[in-house]
Image (cartoon, rainbow, N blue to C red; front, side, top):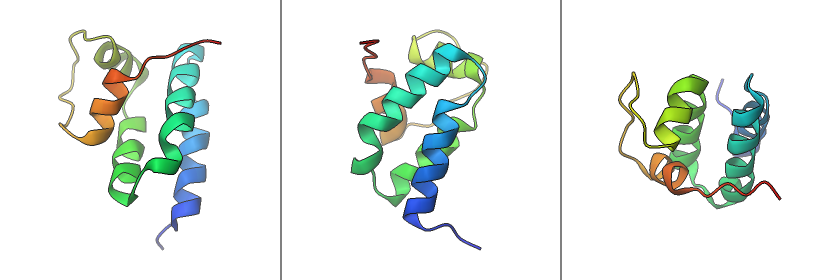
Length: 88
Protein backbone atom coordinates (compact mmCIF):
# COMPACT_ATOMS: atom_id res chain seq x y z
CA UNK A 1 0.00 0.00 0.00
CA UNK A 2 1.35 3.41 -0.92
CA UNK A 3 0.65 6.61 0.92
CA UNK A 4 -0.86 9.54 -0.89
CA UNK A 5 0.81 12.94 -0.60
CA UNK A 6 -1.51 14.23 2.13
CA UNK A 7 -1.00 11.11 4.25
CA UNK A 8 2.76 11.37 3.79
CA UNK A 9 2.71 15.04 4.83
CA UNK A 10 0.66 14.24 7.94
CA UNK A 11 3.07 11.45 8.87
CA UNK A 12 6.07 13.75 8.39
CA UNK A 13 4.50 16.57 10.42
CA UNK A 14 3.72 14.20 13.28
CA UNK A 15 7.17 12.61 13.27
CA UNK A 16 8.94 15.96 13.10
CA UNK A 17 7.14 17.18 16.22
CA UNK A 18 7.41 14.03 18.35
CA UNK A 19 11.03 12.88 18.22
CA UNK A 20 12.01 12.30 21.81
CA UNK A 21 14.06 15.37 22.64
CA UNK A 22 12.39 18.74 23.07
CA UNK A 23 15.13 20.55 21.14
CA UNK A 24 14.77 18.37 18.05
CA UNK A 25 10.97 18.49 18.31
CA UNK A 26 11.12 22.27 18.08
CA UNK A 27 13.82 22.43 15.40
CA UNK A 28 12.37 19.79 13.09
CA UNK A 29 8.80 20.93 13.74
CA UNK A 30 9.66 24.49 12.71
CA UNK A 31 11.66 23.29 9.69
CA UNK A 32 8.83 21.04 8.51
CA UNK A 33 6.19 23.71 9.05
CA UNK A 34 8.18 26.18 6.95
CA UNK A 35 8.81 23.89 3.97
CA UNK A 36 6.21 21.08 3.90
CA UNK A 37 3.83 22.75 1.43
CA UNK A 38 6.64 23.60 -1.00
CA UNK A 39 8.11 20.11 -1.30
CA UNK A 40 7.62 17.69 -4.15
CA UNK A 41 7.34 13.92 -3.71
CA UNK A 42 11.10 13.34 -3.92
CA UNK A 43 11.77 15.98 -1.29
CA UNK A 44 9.05 14.58 0.96
CA UNK A 45 10.64 11.15 0.73
CA UNK A 46 14.05 12.67 1.49
CA UNK A 47 12.55 14.48 4.49
CA UNK A 48 11.01 11.25 5.74
CA UNK A 49 14.45 9.63 5.43
CA UNK A 50 16.01 12.52 7.36
CA UNK A 51 13.48 11.97 10.14
CA UNK A 52 14.67 8.37 10.47
CA UNK A 53 18.09 9.59 11.63
CA UNK A 54 18.72 9.71 15.37
CA UNK A 55 18.64 13.04 17.21
CA UNK A 56 22.34 13.13 18.05
CA UNK A 57 23.46 12.81 14.44
CA UNK A 58 20.80 15.28 13.27
CA UNK A 59 21.88 17.79 15.91
CA UNK A 60 25.53 17.37 14.95
CA UNK A 61 24.76 17.68 11.22
CA UNK A 62 22.67 20.80 11.76
CA UNK A 63 25.44 22.41 13.81
CA UNK A 64 28.27 21.43 11.44
CA UNK A 65 29.81 18.94 13.85
CA UNK A 66 31.16 15.45 13.14
CA UNK A 67 28.51 12.78 12.59
CA UNK A 68 28.65 9.02 12.94
CA UNK A 69 26.80 8.63 9.65
CA UNK A 70 27.17 10.07 6.15
CA UNK A 71 24.38 12.41 5.12
CA UNK A 72 23.28 12.36 1.49
CA UNK A 73 23.83 15.41 -0.66
CA UNK A 74 20.24 16.38 -1.47
CA UNK A 75 17.94 19.39 -1.41
CA UNK A 76 16.34 18.57 1.97
CA UNK A 77 19.62 18.10 3.78
CA UNK A 78 20.89 21.38 2.34
CA UNK A 79 17.71 23.19 3.41
CA UNK A 80 17.94 21.68 6.89
CA UNK A 81 21.58 22.60 7.28
CA UNK A 82 20.89 26.20 6.22
CA UNK A 83 17.65 26.55 8.21
CA UNK A 84 17.72 29.30 10.82
CA UNK A 85 15.62 28.35 13.80
CA UNK A 86 13.86 31.23 15.54
CA UNK A 87 12.25 30.46 18.89
CA UNK A 88 9.72 33.31 18.69
